[in-house]
Length: 396
Picture (cartoon, rainbow, N blue to C red):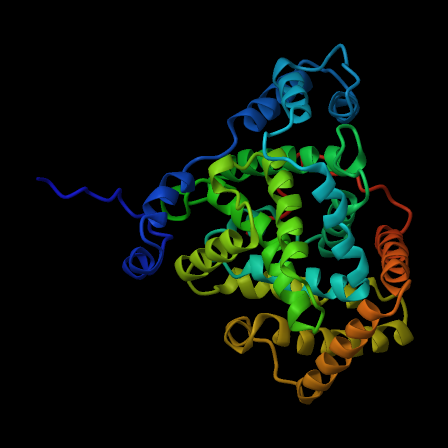
């Protein structure tokens, strides 16, 4: 009787023996996904490129109208197929759960904004292979404020009531992000600077799954760290919402967790196997944390930005933990000693909110207004187009 042979382990996968011992056959099931991407979205990008070469203008309008269900006469076949498939519903989808789930983001209000920026996004930069498409594209290093505002708009749009109905803003933005991924994938491959044999395919299935975990489980855990109560049903619903976003964005179904327990296991698997943060992790984290300074316009705003950056770095250390914070060179400001008191205060306030009639609904209403104002301020009158980049914005 022969012993089954495990498939070759890519260079980017760390602690393979430990992962096999801890997670059983999960590693071997996931290995093929480091080299698999999103064939349909890649085909859309190729066909749209052919339209550009042929001199067809207003490509973004063709994309937008098609994704909203208005069949544009010049839309390529692959784009029509993507739009059509996105309107079908997976058998496991429960729209009542989607409507409940988004309330978690809004009742968290500003705390959700801090967790998204200082935990979810920063955690995504920790992966030394998964961060390479973003680092090479320059979409954060050169345009951190805009990318942060677009990410906030994306998250808020999918969490709004009915936001993931076909043709609704969250549904359309999710599909546009999928096409952005495909465009960046093509550009970094074309650049000659992406080391695919070492890092796996750019924006591959594993890394797309990990991104969904950042916006779901990593976010949930961050709210709990700050003292907010997230009960098991609420957490399962939020994972369900992001399972559907993952399905829309092109993640293969077998990689999408169905509940928080599965989500936690997948997240721990990613942490064990991704390796330690590198120079790109540090550069990306620093660019994100410096956003307040890049938006300051005078000396008074710069002084305020400097204080906010110190606070953000202290809070980021709490949210990601000392080990990762040290790895990306976050300073140990004295303000970190005040964080336990802040966490206790937030936990007490959230306990009061849960017990007093009418406060949960008020918290959700205030949270929705907060996210609207946050995005308006960040965009500064510009549209969040989620357009596909035409080229890499910097040379690394």
